[in-house]
Image (cartoon, rainbow, N blue to C red):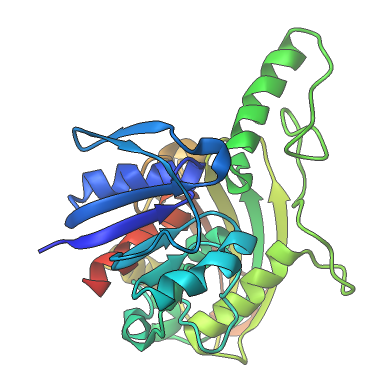
Length: 333
């Protein structure tokens, strides 16, 4: 038996990935509403052999909807998610609007699926860099508590949406043609360049993206004492994020033990070929569901073999966004 499904923000990069994943996983639905801003109203989208007409996202969009997948931005989530809940839908929200609300479960199904049933109408999808980083850290943390986590992210243009991906392509063409690059989606040139993540800086000098990793990890792990610090960087890659993660554990742990734990961890694939210097790259992770992990090695600066370094790559649009939300919706049914 299927559900009555709505997708808010269907014309965006994550909205389009929702459709790809729903089709691939044969998600059971009886009806589907495609919702977007007034700019996209009337646009036709083919899905599952049928043509759907995009409707405007309004407070009245959710009559007889059971599950609503939101990826329309935080302001629209705050505006329209309460109306969806009032109409009887459960909202799985991909924005930052509700993540740190103590009444809203923040869920990664490989880590805390039990929180899904505790929802009061809204379930929050974590930030993409948080998901990609902590899916492989969780099985290690369960086996040997992580005391401190130092993360450096290398984030793809897709994290800033479809317009940013197009800008990377356009700038690359412009620069190779000897022209000045056009900067609209980003304040700075993204093609052939690297810069600090474009979210707002707080008074502590950390940007919002970095603090999301700190606060969301503590909430999802239900471990307020874990020490987390993060540096987030944009790189000229289309859609997969990479992260360098340094972990300090409560007890000694070896790279072989880490590999053994990750080899059986859900949502994780190990790509750690030292002989050929072959480790996860964005092109390996793009289009894949699993988070890829490599460069597994002892941090020799931490005493008693309590330190480990890993390198991860994950598709920001899939597991970092759309797939995680669809997995939540599957567990709701």
